[in-house]
Image (cartoon, rainbow, N blue to C red):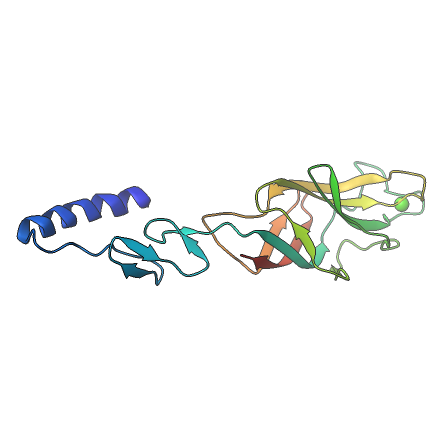
Length: 183
Ligand SMILES: [Ca+2]
C-alpha cells in the first residue's frame, strides 16, 4: 500500500516540479494531517512524514472480558470428576500477571457467555506477546489446568484502535475484549 502511494506520488512530484520550479510543493498529508510546508502536523492518532501510520498507543486497557465455547471435555475425559470445569480467565505478559481471576465460574457451561468486568481497567503493553487463557480451578493449592489458551500481541499497527479484540483461542473458545487506549 505504501509502495503504491510512493509510486504514484513521485511522478506527480516530478511533473509538478517541471511545470513550475518557482513553486515549492506543499507536502501531502494523509488522515486529516495539516500541511505546514515541508512537514505535516498530524492528528494525535497518526504519525509519519505524511501522517500515514497509526501512532503506537502508550498503553492499552482491557475494560471487559467475555468468553464462550470452551472445550466441553478434557480430551476424552471430563474436566472434573463431577463434570464441568470451574473456570477463570487468566492474562499474563512478560512473566507478569495482568489478571488472575480470584473468583471462578463453578461448573461452567460452554454454551453460556461469561462476562467479567475488572474493578480497574487492565493495562497491557501494545508491543509484547500476551497469554490469554482459561484455567480450570482445582483448589487453592492446585495450579489447575489450561482449558484453552491463545498467545498474541494485542495491538495491530495496520488496524489502529478497534474497540473490540475478538478472537478464538487455540481450542476454539470465543473471547471478546473491550479496549480503550492511552495515546
Ligand atoms: Ca475444577
